[in-house]
Image (cartoon, rainbow, N blue to C red; front, side, top):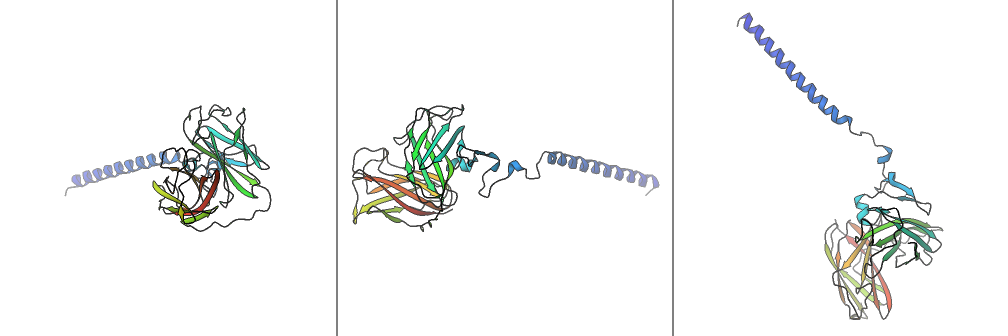
Length: 309
């Protein structure tokens, strides 16, 4: 090989190496440009509570307590948010009454509601250990303030839910469930959660639940009511159907309303079997509360349901 050929080859190799180095530096610069726009340290605004709720969106309501006002998708679907779609729940516990308002997207207190299952407002209260269940239909004043009597709630932490359909605003006609927490003063005595079961009793009635819903999937629960070993066939309408079924998740108190699969009913003659559409978003223990009416008396049966992932 001649000296001229060798020199030319060295020149070409050097040029190729320079070009490769140039391309590598360009690519590295591109990567660094993209990284400059990333937040690599957790900022205070991104801090979360142990339960996974956004602490940056916390505010103080009229009851002086801190309340989550941000609406992560999971909270919005589970009734654990105080604000959703521009509608906001604010309230205060005063003795045995909870007084609250719903503010609409326009910043004004909402005074227009559409009835859902015969009522403008369904109000629920549950203690943190899933005891003390309440389902009420409070009275609304002309200024939009609702008053829900809680009949001497036991001391401890409670979650209070408002389930309603706005009559005005951007969410008119859409069902919403908003909630707040409150603490009833005094020495709290936790009630152990009963183990999962398929049967329970209430006021002499036997209630069984059949079905194995899975978390996040649509399923069906069939409830059967009997008394003294005989099927009950004289259920009376309650809220437009023969029974009302709600559920609360152990731990975070996520809310679910299990809708009856039958159409609205009139007159006596319901039972003994009632089918419900069950779509429970999370696995684990859920406390079910079935309400039904016979002879003008409302009965409430409760049992724990284990929902698989």
